[in-house]
Length: 364
Image (cartoon, rainbow, N blue to C red; front, top):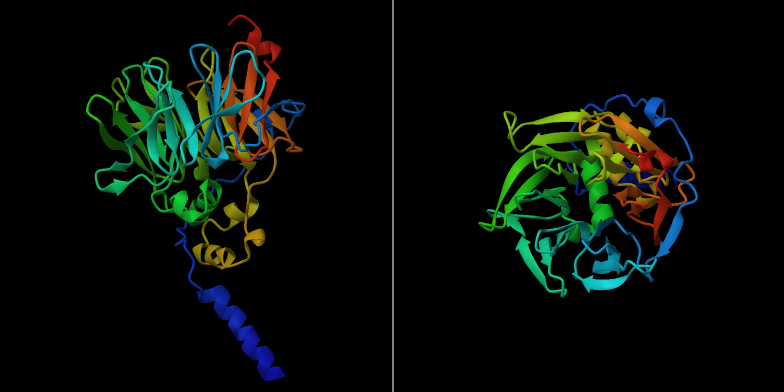
């Protein structure tokens, strides 16, 4: 009996020490979390959201509004949904047969989509789909995540991870967990020029490159680096053109989308509070491999907590709206209109909105 026990024990230890896993973790130094205090002090300002039906779809990851006031949402199942001005629910509009994420409209009224499976897409008003870019040179785009368009028509979009493509790793969420655990900084930001149909890399070495927001004047873009809890400003024009700086660091959660709002505001979502186990294992790559060998339910995962934030172009926090109960979970960002804040989510079964706070309706 003892021999059997020892054999089983050796097998278990061998599995957790040596079984192959997809990740090759890289050591890094996590900043000490300040938690929910100061400008991020806990509140319930994101509670009591008004749900908006997705007609059987889920995960409205991003929203964008057209010139007529219709709102579009990217959802799981490969669908882009549409809410007309006179309705309050979203209905299927176009199926990309991929996973649409970030979106923006170009000057011609085409919906430009960062599709995690297919690359950068253009969808015309009739629903016809064209692939604009699915590689950079010989390097395939494996996880197109968010996109925003400059006044000159150039399109800036993120490729979240060169290591873990969304389609080949079980979807956007499982692939993101692999990239977070590995922390190999393989994300990049790409520029697509419609005039030449060429794509080039302008930033790389990012740990899960995520949201992209364009300065309305075209001077810079803001870039969320999810796994480093920070936001970069990358200059497109002026003396600093081609350089970047961190304008928001050591955030209390994982930043996802970032969206240009009104009156100089930029909105971003924190999909989950930071996970102490992720930070504590930052400098222990071997232990991260051990954890990756555990059953899926035992590995680190997003915590249900609603949180969206508004800041200015220099990273000053203007508003922090939270719901610690996480009844509308895994919040990715905000679409700001004249009357409402539309809240997006990676996993929710509905879209959601709230009337704009009085402070945002006051004259600026």
